Structures are given as structure tokens and as C-alpha cells.
Image 1 (cartoon, rainbow, N blue to C red):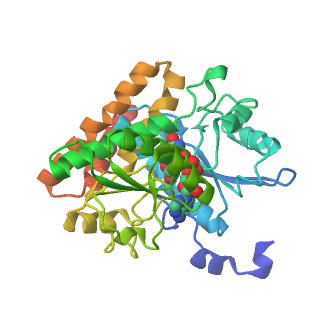
Image 2 (tube, protein in one colour; image 1 turned 180 degrees about the vertical axis):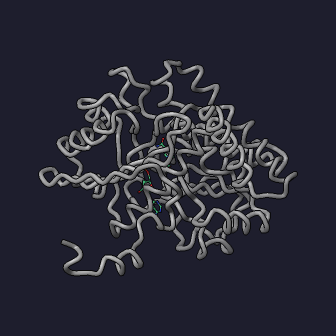
Amino acid sequence: MISDVINVEDLQKIAPVFGQLSFDNHEQVVFCNDKDTGLRAIIGIHSTILGPALGGTRMWQYNSEWDALNDVLRLSRGMTFKAAITGLNLGGGKAVIIGDSKTQKTPELMKRYGEFVHSLSGKYLTAEDVGMETSDMDLVRDVTPFVTGISESRGGAGNPSPITAYGVFMGMKAATKYKFGTDILEDKTVYVQGIGHVGESLVEHLVNEGAKVFIDDINEERLEEVSSRYGVKIYRGNDIYGENMDIYAPCALGATVNDDTIFKINAKVIAGAANNQLANEEKHGKILQERGIAYAPDFLINAGGIINVYAELENYGKQEIMRKTENIFNTTLEIFETANKDEVTTHEAALKIAEERIETRKLVKSK
Ligand code: NAD
């Protein structure tokens, strides 16, 4: 027993679970463990007020289990607001699997994970995130119906990443219109950090529009591949944040706008796919505002993927997916205008709309 080796009260003080920095009244957090497959996962359900908690599964080699918990708490909370501001009847959830997706992901592990998802009886619906492919969701589908983002051949809406990228492109255009007075990205210098599923697709849109694109990734092979496919330059410096650019597009992991980078960032616009780009929403959002950097809220502009997987639940087609995703342009522009008028950060302005929708639903439910 743990109390034999450490005083539980001391443990509570050094590692409180409900008092975790990122704990925000989450409804449920589920720890999943399976010795045979090596599965160690955490499912975070932040809210089910608007509907079942939907959010992707991320597989990542975390430095510690606390990092994994922190990530799933932050990510699942973000999903609540993403669904709310996009007008979808979904709550917020997310899952993380601890491990290296390249070497530790097996069909058995994915199916076992699917069984844990199934045990929640539809309160949490999964999909793909970093380290996951559509084929992985197909494996999960073998054991549970509570999964989206499955392949088109199995009746799903397919890979959500190109739609996410299109939404980010729309949000970026809106931010550019607000900042520069035009939504045309031709000749704008854009640094795309992370050229995975979403990043690569974003690069394609940018190149088609004539932007000057630089790419950055920790995966050298991907860099060479994407660079030669689209004729874009690889960033070879050692401090991307200090580079003079029009647009910084974070498309890797979150929290890249943090205490170390916030005063170095030399971009006029930040618009990218990564979830939770602001390490501290309030503090870093405010500094960006003061520095005149137009920040397009991540949970607003990266909603294309959730719009795509929601189609599987609501049975709408590609045309409606594209219409809803394109609308990210209008919503983002409105957020910039509201934030300016109300003298709040764009993150706060977007959050307010999302929170109001949730509160209204709560009131209706309580009647
Ligand atoms: P992915 O795993 O396909 O790509 C991530 C890329 O980032 C990889 O190429 C990886 O090597 C690179 N990377 C990781 N750490 C890096 C670092 N420190 N510097 C530079 N590059 C780094 O993931 P994805 O599906 O493209 O998602 C990218 C981001 O967008 C994630 O934060 C994800 O949560 C978010 N997002 C994705 C979707 C979607 O539809 N896939 C939807 C909404 C949000």
C-alpha cells in the first residue's frame, strides 16, 4: 500500500490530482492499463453538457506520467470550447496513450484501447490525433462503435487532417485580413512549425496562394520530403521565434507561446493547427495583444477536423463539411473585431462565446 512508504497527506501536497494546474472541473478522468499489450492511456472527459465528449487520441513519448495527465487535461478542456464555438452538439474529451507511436503501437494495443473506450458506453468518442492514423481508428472500430475518423471504405469521413488544414488556412486568412487589410497571402512569409498530417496540407494551400513558406520539423526525413514536394525552404536556424516573419503557424505540439518565446516572437500573425498554443492563456494572450500580434485562437481555427468527424455522427456530406469549415473565416474575423471593440484578447473573446453557449444549454437542461 502506498501509505506504507509515503504519507498520503504529503503526497496530496506535492502531487494533488484535483488541484492540478490544468484541472478545470473535468467530469471524469480514466486511467487505462493493460500489462499484456503495454497499454498505458488516460482518457479525459472535461464536459458532456453539449453532448458526448469527442476528441482525438494522442500517442506520445511523454517525459513523465504527470506530463501525460497535464496534456490530456488541457486538451480535453480545449475540445469543450472548440465544439461549443463551432456550434456542434458535442462535449469535450481527449485521450493520450503513453509511448512511441513508431515503435510501440500494435494492433493488439489499439484494440485493447478500443475496449477501454467502449467501457465508457459512448460518453467519450475517440478519433485520431498526433501519432494516430485512420487505420488505427479502424482497429478501434473493430471493438467499439464509439469512434470517429474511420476510413471512408468503412463508412467514415476519412482522415480529418486536410479539413483541419483548410480551416486553419481560412482562420489564417481572416487574421491576415484583420492585420494587413487583405486576406491574400501571396508574398507573405509564413513559417510552418510541424509538417505532419495537418502541416503538410497547410503548406500546400499556402504554396498554391503564392506565400513564401519556410518549414520546420524535428523529423529530417519529413522536411526533405515536404520541401521537395512543394518547393519550400527548410528552416535551418536555431531560433525560429526570433525570425522576422509575417505569420507563425504552430502545427506541432502545444504551449510554444510561453515565457521563453513570448517576447522573441517576431511575427505579426499567429495562426496554426496545434492545440493549446498559449502556455498560459490569460498571461500570454494579453502579452500578444499588447505587442500587437494578431493571434487566431487555436480552438476556433483548428475545428475543421471535428467538423469532419461530426459528419459521421450527423450524416452530413462533404459539401456541408466544406461550408462549415469555410465559415471559420467569418467567425475568426468576428472574433478579432469583438476583441478589439471589447478590449479583450482574441482568446478571451472566443472563450466567452463558447462559455455562453454551454451556460445556455445548462439552463435549458435544468428546467
Ligand atoms: P502529426 O503527428 O501528423 O504531425 C506533427 C508534426 O510535428 C510531426 O511531423 C512531428 O515530427 C512535428 N514535431 C513534433 N515536435 C516538434 C517540434 N518541437 N518542432 C517541430 N516539429 C515538431 O500531427 P497532426 O495531426 O498534423 O497535428 C498537428 C497539431 O494539430 C497537433 O497539435 C494536433 O493536436 C493539432 N490538431 C490536429 C487535428 C487533425 O485533424 N489532425 C485537428 C485539430 C488539431
